[in-house]
Length: 495
Image 1 (cartoon, one colour):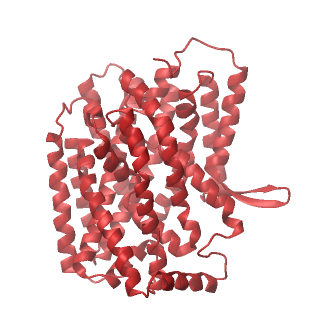
Image 2 (cartoon, rainbow, N blue to C red):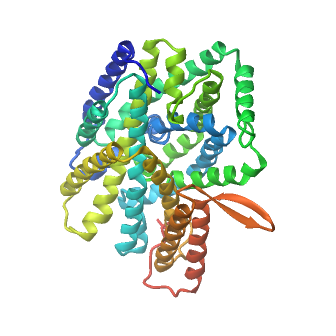
Image 3 (cartoon, helix red, strand yellow):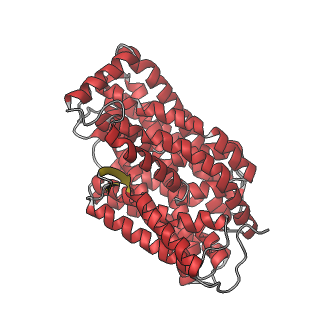
C-alpha cells in the first residue's frame, strides 16, 4: 500500500500527538509522589482508583497492534481471527478471583513485581531471576510490535521513512523517564476516548456506505469461498481445538506479562481490581467491533501487500482526511501507552530481580529508581533498533514465542497463592522443562503457535503454550509430591 501525503490528516495527527506529549510531561505533578522511590515511579504510588485503573489496564491490554493485527487476521483467515473475544472474556473472571489475592500479599510485603512475590515466598535469587528474565524476554518483542502498529499508521498518512517513528519514541522515552507510570495512566484517558470514537464511527458509518452489514458478511463469505473454503466467516471443525486452546492459553498468559501485572499492582485496593474485572469486558465489545473491520475491508474491496495495512487503507478510502488523521493519532497513542507500561514493567523486573540481587545487593531506594529509569530507556531503544533493522516478521514471531514463555511462570505465581506444598526445585525444573519444550515445538513448527496432536486417529492442532504448561505442571506437582520439605516457608496466603 502506497499512500499519498495527506497534509490535513498529518496536521490532525501531529496536533493530537503534541497534546499527549504535554500530558505525559505534566503527569509527574499529578498525584505527586517522590519519583526517586521505585514504587512511586514504577507503580504510581499504588494509589490508582477504579476509573484510572480501568483506563490503565485497558490501555496496556488493548494496544495499537491489537487495532492493526486483529482486523488483519480476520481479513486473512476469517472467523479464526475472533479468538481474541473468548480470550478476553475468560481472562476477567481469572483476574477477579486471583489478582486481589496477589495484590494483598504484594502490598503488605512491598513487592513490586511477580518475581518479588516468588522470591519472597520461596527465597533464593536464581529462580526469581529466571522469572524476571522470562518477563523481560517476553516483553521486548511486544514493545517492538507497538512500533510496528505506529509505523503502519504513519505510512498510511503518506509519510515515509523512520524519522517520525524515532521522534515519537524519543518523546515517549523522555516523558516515561520523567513521569513514570503516571504518564501512561493519564494518556490512557485520551487514548481510550479517541479509540471508542473511532471504532463507533467506523462500525456505524462504514457499513452504511457498503450496503449494510448483510452486504459486508455476504462479501466476506464469497471472498473466503473463492479461496477454496479453508477459511470462512464461521469456524471450520478443523479449527475448533486451535481456536479454543489459543483463546484459553492466551487468557492464562495475559496477566502474567510484566505490563499487565504492573497495572494490577498499581491499583489502590483489591476492590479496585474486582470492580475493574467486572467492567473491563466493555473492552471485549470494543474488540469485537474492531475485528469486524477486517470483514469491512473485504467488502470495501481493499487490496494490500500486507494484511497489517488493511485498517489504514480502509479509513483512507472511506473517511475524510481529518478523520483519517484523528484515527491514526488514536492508534499511534494506543502504541505509546502500552509501550510505556511495558518498558516500566521490564525495568522494575530488571532492577528488583536481576541487578539488585545479583550485582548490587546494597542499592538504596533512590539507586533502584534510577536504575529502573535507565533500563526503561534501554528497553525502548532496543525495541526501536530491532524494528528499524530487523523485518517486522521476526518481532511477530518472537511475540508468539513470548506468549509461550510467559505462560511458564504461571505455576510459580498463581498456584503459589493457593497452596504451600510446591517446592522450589520442582518449580524451577518445571519452568525449565516448559521453556525448553515450548521453544523447541515452536521452532519445529517454524515459530508458529500451534502443534498438531494425534489422538485415536484424529489430528488436533493445539496451542504450544498450553502443551508446554501441561508438561511444566506435571513436573511441578509430581516432583513436589516426592521432595521432602526444606527450610520452613511462610505460605503466601498467610497474613
